[in-house]
Amino acid sequence: MQIIREAGAMQRYVEEQRRIGRSIGLVPTMGALHDGHLSLLRRCRADNDVAVMTLFVNPKQFDRSEDLARYPRDLARDADLAAAAGTDAIYHPAMEEMYPGGYATYVIVEGLTDRWEGATRPGHFRGVATVCTKLFAVCRPHRAYFGQKDYQQSLVIRRLVADLNLGFEIVVLPTVREADGLALSSRNALLGPDERRQARVVSQALFAAQAAVRSGERDAEKLRGDIEARIRSASLAVVDYAAVCHPDTLEPLTHISGRAVALAAARFGAVRLIDNVLLDG
Ligand code: PAF
Image (cartoon, rainbow, N blue to C red; front, top):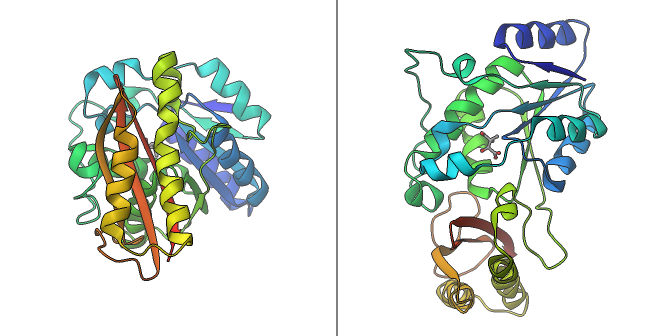
């Protein structure tokens, strides 16, 4: 497995693979790999001739500098895990390579980014959309893989790829969870023991909403309120939002009459967790 640090070298690598007719799969990551990333990497390996992972902790998508400073980093471990999952190349640019002095270009996806993560983390999606556009330009994938855990992000990326005519496929894979339901996240490692015990309340609240819809509940406001109340019942939880929305536009719903998505974000101490489940009304 190669680790490539320069955009030009990475572009030459993928152009050569494309020239000889190979398909390129891409898994963008910020490292701190867990089983959720590994499921993306394995699927990428299975679907494509060449499996590429990017590893770059993108400062432009962090709205709080403490969060960026604490983000776990371990290149040797991540490289071992990526290699074991069949990755052919890691693109791991330095900060200066990604955002050299004078850098001035940003990608903004309007509308979809107004609510939820976009509203609670100003600038977050501008950072995500910008870095992903750059990673796509360098790695020129035929397919790129994202996790459903970052549901709004996956919609933003789909919109961006469609609007900019990038012409490749976005594959979104289901959230991978701990045995107690907690969605895997690189941030879980930062939870203290009590926070970790209580953090499962987020997925429990969302699964309870899913079960309620299966049993016939259609009042989206009630479902939303129940999700929020259940998360608040954990003494360490501070709810950023709980929402029941249209699965494509993320507009809040009052009534469920088809597909929907329930989203939640809550902080446990300094650690902010997000999760979601699809609802089938
Ligand atoms: O989901 C992530 O890890 C990041 O937002 C991404 C897509 C790698 C962009 O930095």
